Structures are given as structure tokens and as C-alpha cells.
Length: 247
Image (cartoon, rainbow, N blue to C red):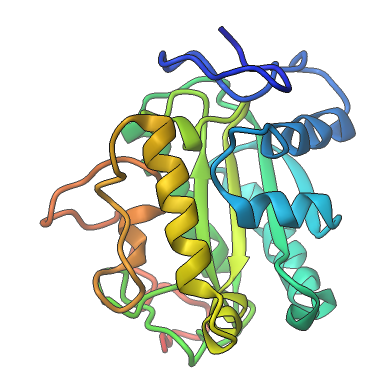
């Protein structure tokens, strides 16, 4: 069944955390559906719940995932988000909901996710964040837009991991800096273990793709699909930036 507040999420790929609104629903309806999903009592990511409860989620709704036409709005939104966010005030996320495609398998979603990230990089003239690598296979890789580093979380209706299911294809951009701040204050390990425990309990097994930053490239985690050790994303950020430079 489809989850309702206080209910549970089924184990089929058609089951998500919140009822899908009509396709032509207003942007705010889609945004509120996302917030309701995160506030579900069983949703495992405590950081995401904190973001929503403290009104620290900026939501943008766009027509189609993987569209080159979406890149300017995405880049502008990320630039504004980074400028307006004070990481000392707690976690914040830039959430992008796409109306199309309504359904897709995991490999297709992964391809569209990287296609979208590639289009942002190609539209971006700012240098890559110096905090991280621009090589998606490097263990110190993080995505960068307008000079700011992000950890990207992809969600969609047909994700095999229950925690990655959402009514619409969605990309969540989390500031790399906020994880570094949490580490510096000694709270990162505790929160990480609580989230992993909740996710394992929900799914019935641990997430095989979870790695700590610096152990393996976080790019492997972006789409939520389980991939093998030889996997590489269909993206090349170092050679396609407007200024012709990577990190």
C-alpha cells in the first residue's frame, strides 16, 4: 500500500512514502508532498527530518529530469541556496522535484541523474570546489556547482531501497560543508549510525552502497542503485566545464 502518516511503506517498487498528487498539481502541492514524505515516522534519514521540521528545505519544481534546458535554473538555484544558507544554523537542503518521467527503472534514473549533473557542470563557469575532487571515481569526489561542494541524493518511485522512494524523481543537494561541521563538533558518527540502523531495520538488510567519505567515491551512492566495484558514472566533469578546468 501507499504510505500515509503513521502507516507503513510496502515492499513493492510502486510503494512510496506519500500519495502521488495529480501530474498537473501546483508546485507547492508537490513540495508539500515531499515534506510529508520526510515527516513520515518511519522515514530513516533523521537529518532530512530535521531540515524539513526547521523549514530549511528549499524546493524547486522543474519539468523533466535530464533536461539541458533545466541547467540554468538549477545552477541559479544552487548559487542562491549556497549564498543564503548559514551552515551554523543547522542542516539545509536544496530539493529539486521533476514532473517527468513519472516512472523509470533504476538504471534509467541513474543515467538521467548524471545527465542532469553533467548539464549543470557544462553551464557553470565557476571553478570546482577546492574542498573536493572533480573526478567521480576519486574517493574524495563531491559534486560542485557555483564553487560549492554537494552530496547528491537521488530518489524516485521505483528505487529498490525503500528509503530512496519518492512520488516523483527528486534530487536533493546537501552542502558538503555541513557534514564537515558536524564531524568537527563530534555529532557525525552518532547520527550516521542511527540513520544506517533505521535504514537497515526498514529494508531488512544494510545498504551495500553506504561508504564513508574518503573510503570510496560518494558518486556510487547518488542514484541509490547497487553497483559493483567497476562502476563509473557516465560523466566527465574535468573536460566539459566552461572554463575548461576541473579542480
